[in-house]
Amino acid sequence: MKRSSRRTPLALLLIFLAVVLAGVGCVQRSDAVAPMLSIREPRSGATSTSANLRIAGYAMDDDGIAAIRVDGVDLLATPAYAGERGKRLVEFFFTIRDLSDGDVTVTIEAEDTTGRVTVLPYRLRLDGTPPTLELGSVTALGGGRLRVEGVVRDNTAITSVRINDVPLQFTPGPEVAFRVDVADVPGGEIVVEDAAGNVTRQALR
Image (cartoon, rainbow, N blue to C red):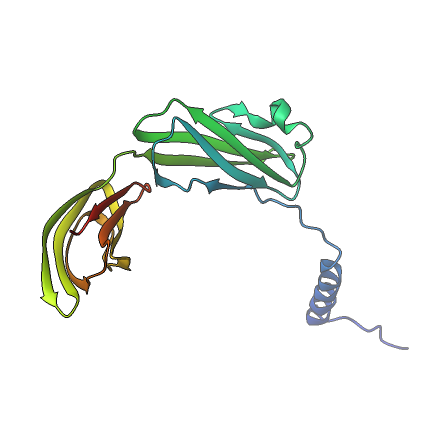
């Protein structure tokens, strides 16, 4: 009489794991990722004041974009976006009119065809005030060189100072003092720019 073979618990476990691993390739995981939403221009931060500010961006999703809402209003419901609903990539823009200096906040939402929503609180500072420049002294050093001293200020941040087209190295901030030696060139000037793109120019002589 033959004894019937018995599978040990370890053997049963190995068989179970083999079946599970074999079936992994057949399992399709549903996409649980919300839409991607990005603003292309202007970037969050600061920009010079415009009576009509144009904001542009895009929404992207594997399942398709069902709605793009700006403060609750669906852009895709307007004639300009006829045929865009359901596409995987939708570029959009909208305009905010009659603006003045100050902070602007807009809530932008992208919803895909399965109901997942991405919310982007978009913030922008409108700044039409150019930087101020106080030129302390311009001293001839001889040998075709000048020593230039002064200070620049802005209500947001100074991001660029160029003297005779030579950029100064500094950490952006509302006030920047400088003392630098540069070449004495015809038509020499200082050009200052703030975070919003406002520019102030002044001749050295």
